[in-house]
Amino acid sequence: MLNKEGKLIMKGRAVWPALNEPDEYKGKKNYKVALAMSADEAAPYIAFLESYYEDSYQELCKEKKKKSLRKYSGMPWSAETDRDGEETGNILFNCKAPAETVDGRPRTRPGLFDSSGKAMDETIGGGSTIKVSIEPYVWFVDALGAGLRLTLRGVQVLELRHGGRANTAESCGFETEEGFETAAAAMATSNDFNDADDENGDF
Image (tube, rainbow, N blue to C red; front, side, top):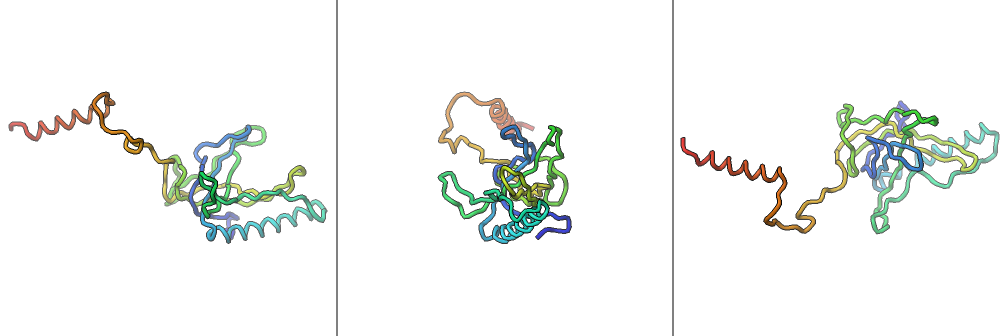
């Protein structure tokens, strides 16, 4: 499933993306996104990544001249759950790239591209339909074992969303009342009156 550049391309819905600016957690900064897709769509990717992990694990054992090595308990994907903790039927693939080197120097941000392949700077919000370009990598740490990482190299945005749904007066249950108006609202009302006078004026 890897392309000729050694990348795995997957399409899905962006969940909690930190792509324009890195997310910081416990002193570590990462560009990241969880990619959501249906379990059926995810199945061939999971099968490929499990096979990739096993092949790389065997290579690690040979390199270290061990019959076996400890395996890390988790994989970079999991079942998506809703706010009530119920599974949605989707799978989340956790893709990330470190924003800094070990000595604290900034790393290049993963490429962000629009549907035509042009570089973009617009903020990518949750719910956007995207493709990710990742490099699977098997790492090993004595204390944790051998684990799999989905290193994020780039994102292509097919449908852009800027984040959560904005609240409106109606969605909050408010009705129109007499009183304070913002300057923008007052200006709009004034322009409406002026337009009406222009239409009804003498020529």
